[in-house]
Image (cartoon, rainbow, N blue to C red; front, side, top):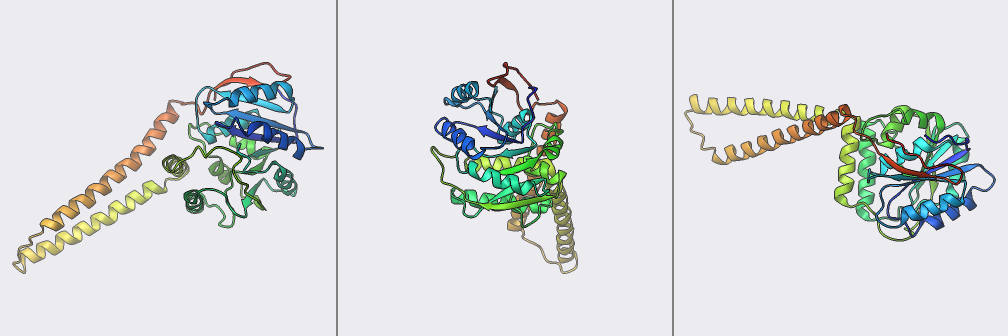
Length: 319
């Protein structure tokens, strides 16, 4: 770990293929953070463009910028965990790299946290993103409300400020699949939010598609709740009761009423439904077992290739 002087605010930004926005982003941060000590931790999540070269040059020239280069693409939450481990601020901001989150809203989050809140989320008045992402955000919020006891009035924004004690608790997590929002909800209920504008994307396109977003959502669900396992158990129990009831009806019909049940369609449908439920339950259990296996084998969340800062030598770090 780098030994760095404590800052008032650390800004952690996971970076992936954002060469066109990085310079403008850091320039806006510098303007927005006048009069307060701050640092920017840019975590390059194995971008395939020139993002790391730009980060390295900016970090070499500015004492406020730390560049962290991951060896392989680890995912957004893993990259954020890497950034948090290098942050030193009393408060830590997490934001995206595409300027949809305005750096000029950071101080508003800061002042809200100074009122005594552990976490302050930025609630977007109107989201400027694809419609399916809006549906995904809503679904993710509903799942978090059910599984993680999220307050219904709080929007789990990717743009947020977290106090240092909560950050330190988050960093105690050692599993291979971190979920920052889930960890926060497990640590504290002392949260707030402010309304901010969601800006249009500065350049390029989103790195997330529907399949990747669903995969991330599945990870979040199975990492912080056993409700899917309980749901599978309940479905199996109800199906068994239904099966015994139908068996009783058919037996009475055959032996008492002397009626022969043709039942080919019923048999096929029952087989398909039961087979699907069984495979679904096995899949859910397999998902949990796979994550347990990877945790036991201590799969790292990320591995760091390089760390650059104007006044620090390069170091390597694995977590």
